[in-house]
Structures are given as structure tokens and as C-alpha cells.
Image 1: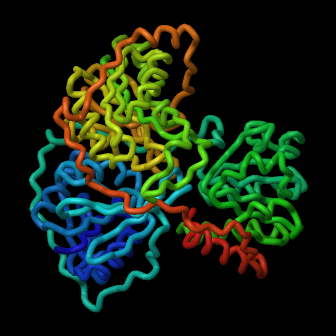
Image 2 (image 1 turned 180 degrees about the vertical axis):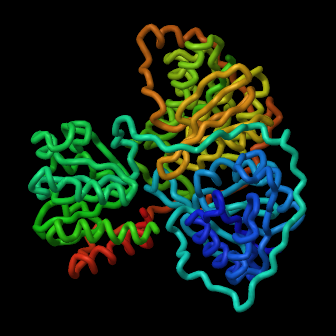
Image 3 (image 1 turned 90 degrees about the vertical axis):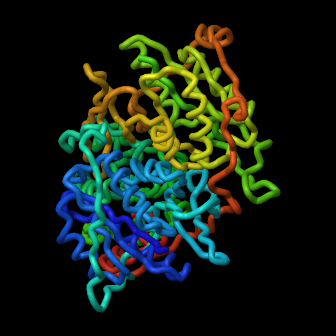
Length: 327
Length: 256
């Protein structure tokens, strides 16, 4: 019984988190003394399966069916469920993507199993896997053990495992195409075109990442520097009071006691000294980065990471590094 | 439309959390409770759909006796009736077991649409709705930003990653888990609070519904994650410092 990692692709392009899931699977397989296999679901997967076979895995399972060309929870549950029933893995590992969140709990439930979602760590204790999850929005951690018979299911949080440590195999792993029986009538949802849209209004309270600018930005003409960083991070642009008072940014972007209270997972304070009126609006953020020329600025009291320096040099460099990392 | 909205009662957001003696949960005696915030958006969406298309909103919660106050609050906001699967253990059980309890209660009602929030603020499994859809045998979609009724069923707007969206159509009955922020939630009015007192709230024990509560997952230990709020100052020239910072944000803070 192997550790089976199910990777995610969309239209022939790998989801980045797939590799982190594979890294988690490799780590768990080593601890459990079991082989690791990799699977991918979709249509026309030959080249992706061949690429996957280059990694050090026991085998690659290509769950390939025309009705899987477009993702649907019903189609993916049916097809992957058949493969899992046939292969009887010990543990199934998935990346905790939006798509996995939508179908993996159903897949596990269809096999009368429960998924341990969004894990940030794992270890093997006496031959048994124990998973670390965050509770109360990250305020607590919990060690979770699974009861009952395998297969067990787990999805891993973005960034929890390092994909850059994956090893390639000396020879390509064998690729197998499990037989899948799937009828169009089994897929009850009808997905339409994917699209992007411009954001209507900004909701800083819901933002996961915020780059906020303060007086240190000096001129309204410099604000695009911070805006570019926010875009690179996939986050929102916020500001301290003086910036909005000056009309450089609309009031809806103001963070602090007279503006919005935010608690994103990442808050990057650019040229903000950190007056208490500002700090009360953002101190609930999970990770705070401060970029400021003044090493004694109070913002560093609440910052997890700090760069003391000239923001006009640091911010563009940071934007570039973020873009590089996000590929 | 016959709409069922699932609610969970969780510790208030500003609760001071202390680990209990078993080291497997937090001390509940210290806590105040509220409706899980993501579920309030599901409730609001249910109320809006009812106002538009007629029908009924039934709220269902699985939890200890205290969870009845969450149901009453939903009734005060305009829900018509409540179902409560009551058991002390239900407050902290894994989502599979909770979903089985909810499914058993929902099966006592005819329904067109089941709504859940995205995830709970306490356990944060984010999967009770999806499991529920499988147990009830209905199609589902998650992270929903818009719900519209069509001739044959519903058309919903699903949020994808990185600013992408997708419309998905499906027949009814169906289950949706609603994205937080989809609407602006209402407050209960004084009149609503008064009316809520006479609305029906049906209680079940898991045994009455024929559901066992054997957990599928067990929390072995709860602990405070190690966190050093001491600022790590990152040295070096701009480019070098930026690269180091990105590395730390990805693999240490894990926020990228």
C-alpha cells in the first residue's frame, strides 16, 4: 500500500502547489516506509504524465478521460474514487487548492473516509501518521490522528512543504492509465466559461495580503511603487491616515482606528512609522513586514520581519523577487 | 424555495483562548459564543432567496444545548424554523461526524437548497458542506459569490484562485457553500427577536436520528504555535535583503 499523491493541473498547466503536495507525500512515504505514487486527473494527459514520471516515484497513474477535460466535483470524485478503490493506497495526499477543497471531502466521503484538510506538518509516530492543523484561525495548533481503516486522506497547506527538494529519478517511472467508467449523466453540474473581472470596490477586511503605504512614500507619484508590490503579491493596497487625508488614495483604503481594521495573513507596511492609531487597525495581522528607514520606528515593535532601508530601493527589489518566486 | 441553512456556534472572535487540562481543547467555561461568521453570509443569502422567490428558511445546527441560542438568533433575523441536533460531543467533533448528524436532521425535511458557510472560525475544516452534499446525494459547488434561480435549477458564480471566476449551473436540490462577503448581513430587529420566541425549534438527539458519533479523527493535543514576535531584521543591500525576505515569507512564515 503506497502513499498516493494526486497532483492538480488545469488545461495542461500544473498547479504550483502540486509539487508541494508531492514533497509532502515523499516525506510521509519515507517516514512510513512505503512507496510513493503520483496521480493526475484530466484529459489528454500524456505529456504531463511523462513529465511526472521524471520524478522519483514508484509509478504514475494517469486518470485520463474526455469527461475530465473540464473539472467537476462529480466527475473527479467518480474517476478518482474508482482508481483509489482499485489501487488501495494507504494514504492519499492532495494540495489544499480551491479545487481540492471542493471535491476531496466528497471523494473521501464517497469511500466512507474523512479528509484531514489544510495540514501544515506531519510526522510518523509508531507507524501511524499524525497531522498538524491550525485551529482558531492560526491561534492554536492541533495534532490530529485518523481513526479507522485506510485509505486516509490529507490535503496540505500552501507553503507548508518545500517543493524545491524534490528529487528526480534515475529512470522514468512507469505510467499507467487505469480504466475509468464515466458517463456524462453522472456529472450533475455544468461548468461554464472561466473569466476574470475588475474588482468593484475594495474590501480590505477580506484581503489576505495587504501592502500599506505611509508618509515615507513622500509623493503621490510614488504610490505605484507600492501598488506594483501589492499586485505582485496578489494583495490589496492600503494606507495610513495621512495618505488618505491628502487625497492620494481614497478613504476606503485607510487602515487604523478611523479607518478599517484588518487582519490579513501578510501585512507589508511601507514607509509607515506605526502610530498607535495605525497599529490598532492592523496588529491582528498574522505576519507583519515593515520597510522603513528609521530603525526606531514603532512599526518594528509589531513586525515579524523588518528591513531598515530606503523604500525606493527595497520595494522595487522586493516586487521583482516576489514575481520571480511566484513564477 | 425550501432552503436549509447550516449554522455552527463557535467561540466569539475576541475570545481569550486557554488550553484546557486535557490539552485536547480550549477551556469552554471562559468563552462567549456566537454564530460562526462565515455562516452568517449563508443565512443572509438564504433569507434573500426566500424574499425573492418565496418559500421557507429552516436553520439547522449540530451542537451542545448552548447552540440553541445561535438558532434563535437566526430565527430573529428572519428564518422560519429551527432544527437542533443536540449532544455535548457535537461541539468539537470532526466534520465527517458532524455532517452525518446534520444530514440526518435535514433528511426529515423536504428541501431544494442547502447553504453552508465556507468554514468554521474554530476548527476550520472547511468541508462540512461538501461532505453533506455527498451524504444527501445532491450536486454542490463551493466558494459561491452569486446565486440565481433558473428555469431548471440554479446558476452560481464560483470564485476560483487568482482573481478568476466561473459560472456553474446545476439542478435542484443542491448544496452551496457560500463565500464570506457575498452580501451585507442584516441585524435582528426588536420585532424579529420578539417573533423568534414563538417560532418552532425542533430538537433531536443523535440517537433519535439513528446517528452514531464515533469520531473519524481525533485531536491528540492542542498547543500554542511557537511564534517569536521579535522582529527579524534583514540586512544587506536592497536586492539581497528582498530575496532573503521572500525566502522567509515563503518557507518560514509561509504566507506566500
